[in-house]
Length: 110
Image 1 (tube, helix red, strand yellow):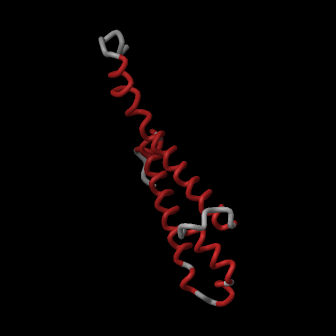
Image 2 (cartoon, one colour):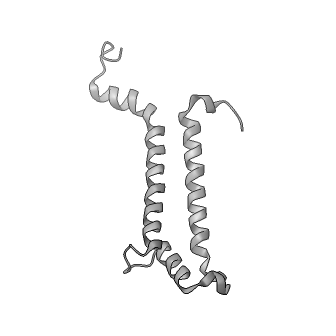
Image 3 (cartoon, rainbow, N blue to C red):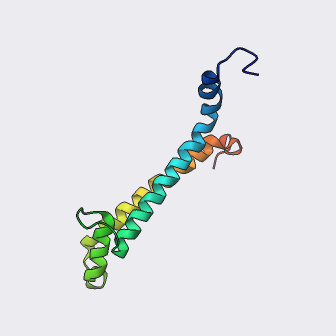
């Protein structure tokens, strides 16, 4: 229909198709960021990551190796709290993008 009305391929792609795909693309991006963080922290926690730069996974691996939890060293817990906050924020962003992308969720209030 757009071709018949005289629009170019560029206009069809960026004005008709992309606005409808954008929420799905952003939700996929958020999922990829989530997976990347889990992979990075998981590898560091197992001791398979890079040791030249301090990361959340390296701090958690050091805390586990030193036995911080049984000793009651509460100051080793901020990396875990940061990860929980980051994953909670990504989950909220993904739910919001799902409400934008899914027409069944647009008009309903939870």
